[in-house]
Length: 492
Ligand code: ALA
Image (cartoon, rainbow, N blue to C red; front, top):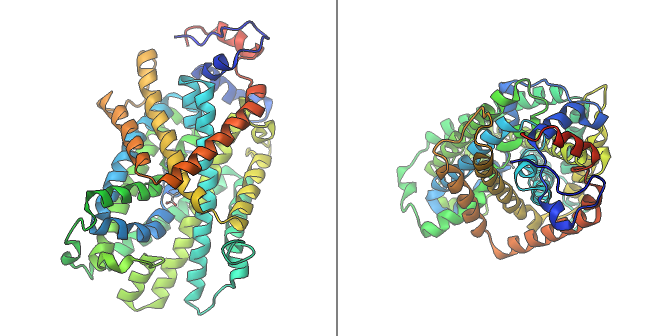
């Protein structure tokens, strides 16, 4: 199927036509090579760095903080909730792997939607990705701020609320969250390679402390804690699965590094799948170890449960301190890599004209989108510092699930329309896996509460208004240059 425009060169298409016009994969690759004359990113990353970017973006508050909120919902079956959420994420991860190997640019699911469902869905997906990346990272930074507080509390120091809580939360500014986001921004501006190195070191450290937690917790293992397995019934287990789905958000971050990978077609699918394997194994082990060590009712209202368990079992405050400090770093690496992903997605969207040009300017010196990174970093830092995120943070999972569902649909679409196109990775058991993947996302979305849906609806409404006011007028796809290109690549 071709993407030949139906409008005359220079004519403005109708809204309906504009919403469904697609951008070909070849055209995306060409744009990535030229970056509209704005300087290019550098291909620095191999499979190790890419995997670490995904693990870095994934493993954080979900297991360190949200585990404690989810145990009272599921009971001892919390480990099953992690398996269910992980299975749903894995179904989408294999779809991401196929798409990332086929469309190795920096836009992730935004680009996959543009290539398949057209501009309207691509914008919606890009707008959902802002929820998945920018809004979630603000929420994650707030979580890191809380951990900083608990860490220094080990020394008997407590930050005053005025500088550790946002207005509305009893304070003036959440300073730890602000500082964490700004530090990550400075690092990202300096260079992608430097950021990836720092991230890799932290990822090794965070996986190590979680393995250490399992070893310590297993010394206090009580099999009786697993009975009854489902005190809240299967409904409790699946509601908790929707909640802990947050902890899998981020495995797709490697797919935003498509233009900085040395061999994206080979390495992106590997990195995505490898990172899923690592985080799922760690999550299930930690959940089993935590329940084995403490009865599920103990978790109610306990903040930072893993630190508490370590402290209670070892009776060594310094061990708890090392654990807590590494936990803060763990969350910092989520902030670093998720911010990274957001800047690369916006870079791609700006190339298409859907967001302002400034996000696409790459510095020839650092090979990073310096201005775009500062804008994203400052907005996220201010959001984390001054806005009690509340319901908006809950909406990040719903936005992410929607983006994941679209990727599953994109796989099916391209299998039907471009069966002969080379794929470096193919989803196994097609079409069962992408169909199940999309259904699993819808199922988890349906499990989220009405308030979350309401916030999501409001978010979408804002997105539609922004598109009509800006994106629709400034979209460059289908412009004269593209049309000439498309006509000479009819068979793409
Ligand atoms: N998955 C990321 C976390 O758990 C967002 O912090």
